[in-house]
Image (cartoon, rainbow, N blue to C red; front, side, top):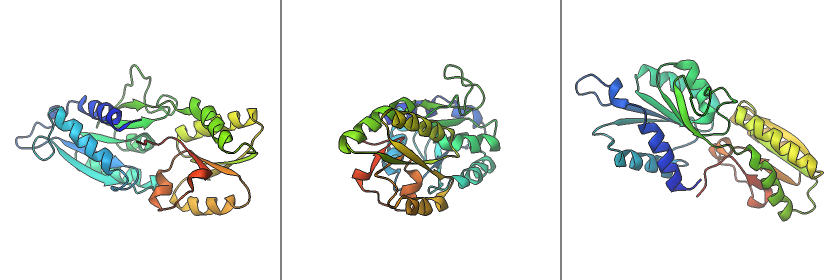
Length: 247
């Protein structure tokens, strides 16, 4: 997804919620709670784009709207605590990523939640349907699981003798589990053996990479948020990047 598309889609989705309707107190600005999955530096261009699109829609930070930024730093276990903090601060809307929606919905059923880049919002229970989400969550659906086969084809072009593929992903996130299944199905068609490295938190990443040594020719990464949070560097020739917003 290109930067301009992200600006338009996410900014438009967030602005669709009537912020002013929840800010009736005189002198009180409506508040957006922005829950980022990784770190401020990793998301700097997207937060800038988000603020820019809000301005284009008539919402200026500090003048007509306040934005509270919180960062999970690659630790999905922090989603619930951050969402609870937003509830205590009585924010008017929560903007976040698809992987944080389930935890956020457990904390509040009334504050609107706008998510970006959810792989399967219906299958994961975020919304009732794409046409009529229902509940308090809405956002952008990126159905990328069907692209797993194409990504594997590209990887095989780079590595024609590929026979052993490792897949790493957050198995606590439904979208990742779906894509893992798609990659495994595509790999079987190509006669490629696969092994899944299950990630549930940042502490699982280092052991998973240790397990890779000598056991795989390539790595398919479902989500890079947690990897980046630890400052790990993966050689570009060793992976296919997936489920990631890149320029």
